[in-house]
Image (cartoon, rainbow, N blue to C red):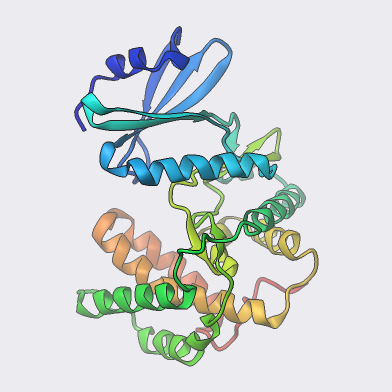
Length: 304
């Protein structure tokens, strides 16, 4: 994208009178992100290539629906385009606070569990939003995605010593994804995107990777990321979501999605973030040990 940020700021009347604008460098999104301060308020400005206009507009409308349903997330302020610069932009509320992954370094296990309960309740509300009618069946999309990543894994250089066990477990259980619900998925629901204020749940950010599918698939980040940071949190998230202990059917799908995402994690990390490859393998090993290399559908850390 080719634009001058000062020119863009001048074109957005809502932000006239801003006192500072600072680019956010982290993240894998193709968008450019800026933190803008105007008066006592702080906003996030996302600038996208115009080719993403329809996708970003849909995301903006989704953020509006989240607000209508009282789901704690970033409030959308403005969406428009600047055709001369071939860009579109979104202004959303910046949620002040600390990512849970940082705050948990100073939190007791009890607080981490309570935040997990709140996160689970919010995730449940997210999953009450059904997919639009044009979205194809979950089993078709998930199976296709899995086959793609498995093939990419097989032609790649790295091979996991236990891949045959993982593949066998998946093939024996993949039928479970048939006729699963199609609901809204955050698709990146973990501790880096959960914001806390005074050690209390304040909201979830980064819906730009949202999808539609089996609501239980949104728990794969629990096994891949959050579990390594805080077992009390992940137990809380599950119990907050279900309001009770989940049935074995949940654990069957939880373990299946954890297994399926092993291959996509290997391929994606190898292609996009090779410096984190060893870290990804450590996270995968935790999943395997938690499930006794998929001899157990329920992870060993869940023993209420």
